[in-house]
Length: 208
Image 1: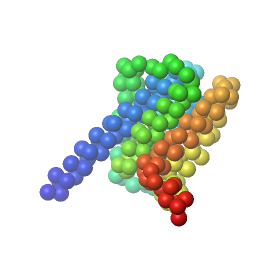
Image 2: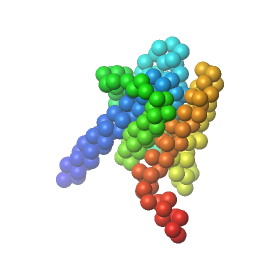
Image 3: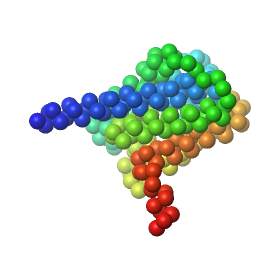
């Protein structure tokens, strides 16, 4: 009986990781890449290398993840580590092989930023809610969460991603890109917090 429950739970985890990774890959490849946004997290670093050298985003993300994953293994635990490695591989493969099969958005840059933030936020929130992550900066974020559990994931994401957005904008001399990148980071954090802590959490606090 326990085995059936375990495998049913694992099947749900994998399904949610697939859907979440699909949303993240669309946000990254089909909206952010063409708009040349300085993105957040390890994906942002991978995008910088993609724009400079044409290196595949998913593969670079995996390579960047290896040392961080090893450093965070003991802090985050075996279960979270294994789920995150699995989800990292799924999301990286989707960015490199699935997302390129879909149309790329070529419209307004502001609308692209909003779509990137909303789709990415939904995707990451789904993954986080199943006790997993896409690795990279997520390992760092979850490590901070483990040490400082009172902090919301959205706030940690917003702070941790700011430096990468700034670096990407300065490197490519794109001040508008910095603004759009900060907007994306804010929407990410807002969507993650609302989905994980409840859509009515802010309203409830105001009423009290």
